[in-house]
Every structure is written in structure tokens, then in C-alpha cells.
Length: 110
Image 1 (cartoon, rainbow, N blue to C red):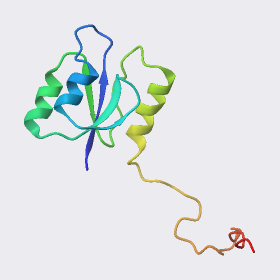
Image 2 (image 1 turned 90 degrees about the horizontal axis):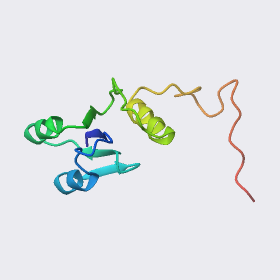
Image 3 (image 1 turned 60 degrees about the vertical axis):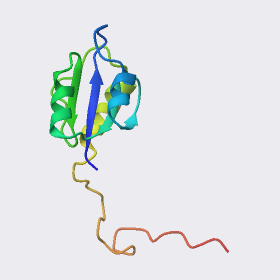
């Protein structure tokens, strides 16, 4: 399921979280201003993009501009959301559990 990240500006004219929630399924949320929705069809996506004070980001992209006034937690969440589909680099990925240089797992408790 593809998702779109929405960030609502603090402008009084900005649609509320509830207005967007009624029209679209919210899949993840941090606050009333920062949340993800199921990717809508092209027509609905164009409607959302046309709303004043709404910033949209497709999954895997990093926002070009993060609106002012976000809390530290919201900023971290937006950054993490943008990076979640990036390839991960893990030490020992694909190696056997007893490969040289790695410790085997603890034995099960008796």
C-alpha cells in the first residue's frame, strides 16, 4: 500500500485534520498536522494538492520544504518517514550467524 505524507500549515484557512480524515483513510499519524494517508486516486490527489496550506510527499521522498512551526518530534517523524523506504545497510546482512567476526546468539535458557 503506497502512502502520502500530509503536513498541514498552521494557517487558520488550512483544512483541519478531521476534514481530510473524513475524505481519506489515515494510516499513520503523529499529530493533527502531520500524518500519512493511503495514496488516493489521481483525481483526489489533485484535489488535496490544490488545498491551501497542505504539503504532500510521496512515499520514499524527502520533503523539499518542511513548514515552519513543526515541533521537534514532528520534524524527526517527517525525516524518518522520508527515509523509511531507503535501502538499509546492516553489518553482516546475509551472513551466517556464526560468520567470522560475529558472535553467535545466546543459547536458549535451560
